[in-house]
Image (tube, rainbow, N blue to C red):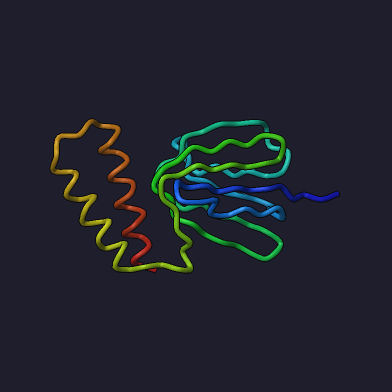
Length: 131
């Protein structure tokens, strides 16, 4: 019996990824990293800035997201995000610019939740520059 399920990652510009041979996905949920396998209970969760790890028959792929909402239902994982990129196409200039912009936004008056998200984004982006 197949242990595969479907994933769809969508951002405002397009359907970014759609695959049906997924064996596991790890997402950066607010509660912490969450692993999704076939037949997981139905769930909806908010996502924080971080790395989505997608495991399929072809191997592992990693994607950075700024934020998002995920829903897993009937063995379909749908992720809606404002920004996503494949780490194989890592753009160091974009990452450095994003870190600078995020650090500048910390000097503005922002609420604790926004500060948490900005700090999370900075931490994840800095970890990408170390690899």
